[in-house]
Length: 309
Image 1 (spheres, one colour):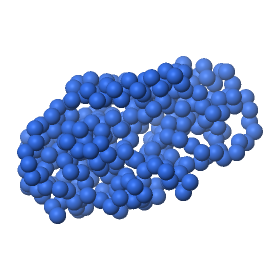
Image 2 (cartoon, rainbow, N blue to C red):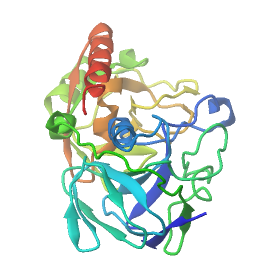
Image 3 (tube, rainbow, N blue to C red):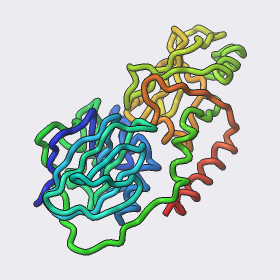
Image 4 (cartoon, one colour):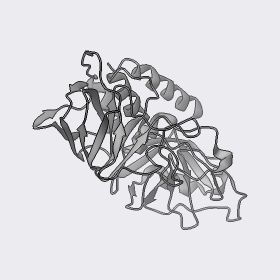
């Protein structure tokens, strides 16, 4: 079968789908696309099913040679992209001819871009998912980020497809990515009232030690009013845990499935794509919302996403 040849992988390129669910009892978190809005949009642009595996590129995109005709789209963070010597636009689908080369540069307004290909990337399904879980070496392409010379199987394009473009509104969440809305965490009572004032009134910086496991933040420490140890319990994506030194960590798509640090808050589901687009040295602020408002925001986002094309 023809392949997508990796001439340069960029900083970190992994195969991702919507995630791997139902295996937390084995210590395996969902992984999957860090920005599900961009991931799903890319699949719609190229006429794929919603969960078709795509390539997630981080900070700096890669260079890829197509061995067959294909139909592709780039979504997520903007990057300078070219097919051979011709510039192409993000959030527009287009046909690529056999022998052409796609070059993707550095991300401009976020951390991750997605390359979606009609027919997807043909990799083995592991635990019901094609997602790469880098920490455990499960799924995707040999459980790791791409390397130069990797050849990914793709399905040749056998019919002409009408190019699509997404509405400009699809990028609104990127323009607002520095504001994260949160709900109270399960150990909110562990923290002093001053800690909540600090969390919602002062900015935090994303540190260089952040990755798909979690985003470590730096700012004013969050003080506890209860210092006893808690029992280890389950963790979900978006939980904000606070270790003893008081610096919050946003647990993300490859988070550990259990932990013993108290969780002061939780990023709402509608804002998890924003977390996936944060990069080192970005400034973030937090805003509390109620559970009903968080649910309404997520449902509204899903409704708006269906009209992005």
